[in-house]
Image 1: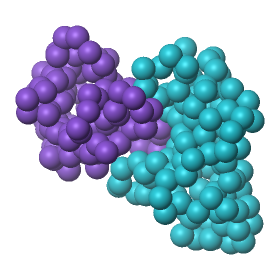
Image 2: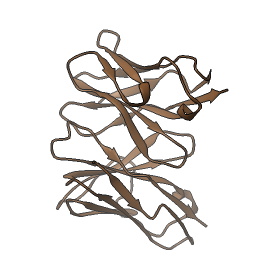
Image 3: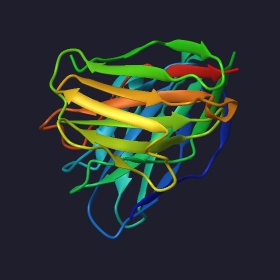
Length: 113
Length: 116
């Protein structure tokens, strides 16, 4: 079975500053990796995903993430955040042969002016 | 594309009543749908996986007689919370996977259930 650890529960950041959200996973088999964003009282929206190929993945809203197999990490970055990026961010993993997603505990990003 | 809807978005019910939540994939056929539960300030917990035309597979600790799941068609799954109690109050989110979805799930907007 796979598991996901999001190392930061809360990340406060000033507007236009960069942000990095850390995610580590464990699995004995090949995995797919995802980052989702959740705004208050809403469902989840996919930011980006890693299935195979290039380890640097670009997503929506200026986010990108890098898959590092040796460190079993999939950290999310944005070079310059906006107030509208204030939300909850979830890292998720699924084994290639299984549709089930395992989610991390989430990281709350609060962007201040 | 890949839109998933849920109905209702919010529901308040009395203790002991049953509540049905619908999850629909609007522009694709979903062979597999998932039901999650999310407590405040917490992550999503998978409750069950449903495949069209077959019985749902429940996660450990989830009462299948309490949370009835029906996946009657390739675009509709329902979750019925039977004999609801205040501890069932939560945010319920469904997701759907298309047949060639590479494990990707598309999420509904969620249903806020409050049991009085």
